[in-house]
Image (tube, rainbow, N blue to C red; front, side, top):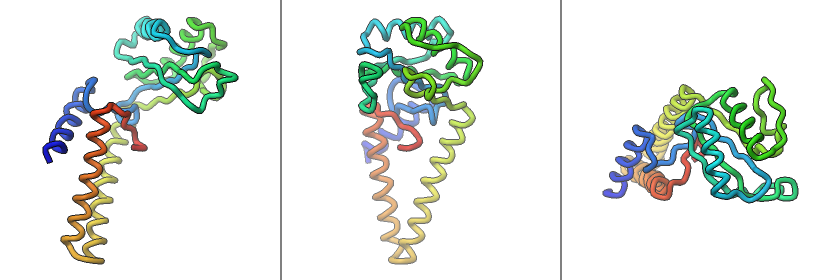
Length: 197
């Protein structure tokens, strides 16, 4: 009970402050843009510093840059399984174009800037480019909480009809306990929490 209460408090404070502790919210819940860029070789700390400077130059001061290893990459084309993951609090195609254009220039990657939407399918070194607006993120959070409550109530109702009220309560409490423990472990180990989770 103490661990669960502490985890709920940690998650609440993290969500309210969007801080660097507690739940590591994905863009599904916070809104923003995430890009995964392969520079066609292993990523160094100098590459991360250059990417951070690029983001500062275009006005993204709250962005985070990290090295991620993606096992599904075709290393014969991209040269390495390491990619640069860029997370920003802003969204929109204009921001994506600025980031992709600056990364292409800095790391000598092929890219022709145009007014078209940035598409990871047409740029071989851009592995993914996802963007969620703040309104959509808020709706997703509401939907996730609502679906959890509705599922719990319906489960309680079914088990009460099939067995008895005490069995239903025990089943729902056990399920919520398991969910709470997984959320707390995600908070402690800073595993990204997205809508799939």
